[in-house]
Length: 204
Image (spheres, rainbow, N blue to C red):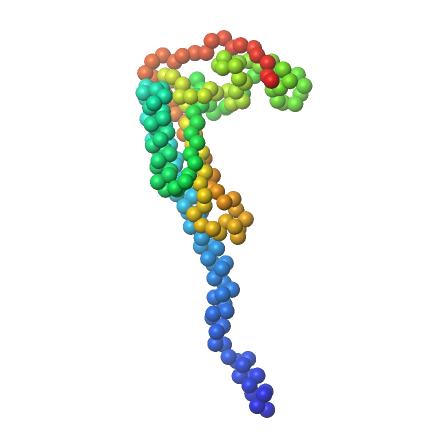
């Protein structure tokens, strides 16, 4: 009888139940909380990067933006703003220019004759080198800031380690990768240059 009473008492005893429930729920809750922090930081970084990039892009459209030293100075400002928020970030900045917004939006490669039908320019197939840089540009653009009235795609790629270690549990990449782009036209500080007649070359 005493044994039955003891078992009944144990079955009704709920002391420590909260601790057990907390131990079960806490890891999941913590992972969700850290994941929310990580996502929020990435969104914040993307908005800051886009804002800094647009400001830098506007500065680069001035006539002084064609100067190599000024471009390096502008790129350094973008990198320092990013690294202020994410230490150890790797920032890569590129510039591609086109003669107008339409060509920049289309980003169509220089035309070529696809003799073997594989949709790739290779095996000595001829192509039109419209900007005469001896390379077939897959997006139809050219490297650099360009000149007066040219349309420039200014891009920053940022890669930095995640702030929280929860990525291991969620199977995420240990690094965050962000891409921001702005498209602006250089100011009309002079007449827009034009490419010479296209040269026919062969793809490697």
